[in-house]
View 1: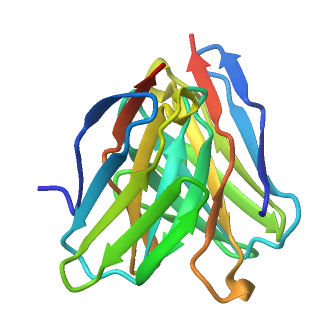
View 2: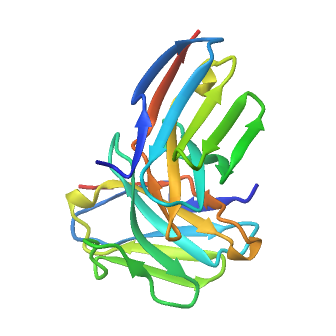
Length: 117
Length: 107
């Protein structure tokens, strides 16, 4: 099956710094990528949807200036958490969809655990 | 009320038991995913279905569109099946997730 990678898998940063998380589709072209956030023992919450070459669409309540998303190529999307605070500590997961496959199959990355101290 | 409800929330089983996890949804969907999330956090897609039944190894997924209900069955459960199982439905091109079912299988 299709593979989606995320980097880094785990990051610890100090409050006020920015962190960039990369999401790559390794063996297919991802026309659409999704970024999710997951708190302990809770379900995934969609943060934003990004389509290659266009601006991301953010879900209600998600600050676009705080969570910067770039989808510059068909295989790479990045999420930058700017001026991180302890409340941004969470598990961030990306997923990718290949629209050209003609179905709704969505492939998930392994996630990035962010801890802000 | 959540748009996607799963039951049970927690499930424990002895190795070898037959397991059923249920998912009910209240919105129109184009497809339904069953996902598996292990303690490390990574998510694996087990099935995507829009009608009928699919089988892969010891896993079987069924969906009844009229009743807005899907089930995931695990035959001959094994400790390595211990994970959180998540039902997610496609509605207006976005996935809506259930809250998950935490399964523990003991030897």
